[in-house]
Length: 402
Figure 1 (tube, rainbow, N blue to C red):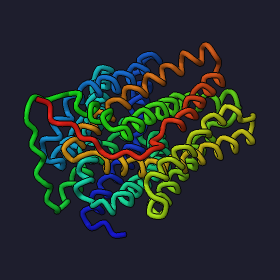
Figure 2: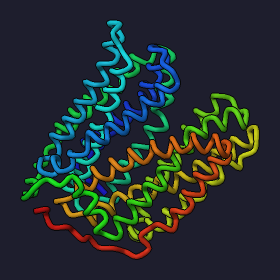
Figure 3: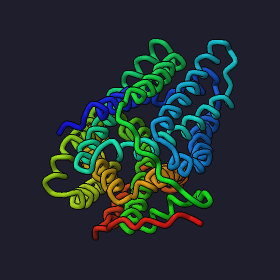
Figure 4: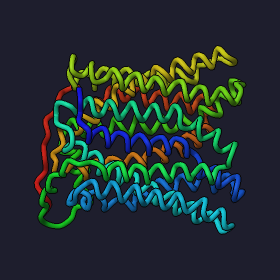
């Protein structure tokens, strides 16, 4: 199905910025360690402060974005990320880079990411008709997993060749190119819906919980994504220390398993057309749940590497098929007048819950050991199979706050 030249321009812009983010993945913590020689606690705080403070800064953005055309917001978010990230290598070149600057950059980057995600989701709904949304979300999901497969490997090579600060320049420039790509979209945007009354910072959450299907998926997303993020850093230690695998194996593990996400996203549109959106949510929402619980069962040596690779790839095939179906369902059941606020509330919650789970993982590792903490994360992920929209739900829009 052809989605038109404007969609191709949008996908190209997304692909450029996603590849840049993949290349710059982990660059800020590397700069903190290699250039500023900060402590392990400060590295952890950099990630935590960026996530939580960025989410707080983004809190009033949903209503702001809802009242405006979306492309200018997307371009502004890209330009903010470009300027913030570029300031790091510039400051490093002049010898004035500091840890507080890295924290500010992390916060701005996170807030701009939430704003861009909210505006781009609402924009895509108006750019692509209902018949093409599953296809469009599937194509974006393919791009995400392709860039996650190739980007960190390219970034690792660049860090070795030119250093982390210059590698961050690539990430920064990718956002500038993304803004230029979005600027080339020709189709006029519809006039934003008029909103009367006072601004309600909780409008997005109210809308989510007023719709049974959205509310169930919202809880499912937090309880599945949180444990997954918790297990991710533990898996690195597990592979290197418990299974005694070589460091190169972790990079191969990440790159190859992400191709499972590409496969899942590639088959999702065809399966959606054949079986329907609701069945896709249920089938792949269940199929993605057991694999995390299998990770801590891996034996030592190469047998453990193969075990982990199969489990992680199977997980990402199911997730790659589930995510575009989920994004399409959320578009279909959310009224245009609330789309940006729903996406903002969703992103803020996810960006707050995930660091909390990561911190919980550290506590559980101290109490239960590495495998015990991983079992806990896998068990919570498995239980999310019960938290799916087993009964279809129609949108239930809220009235404007008075």
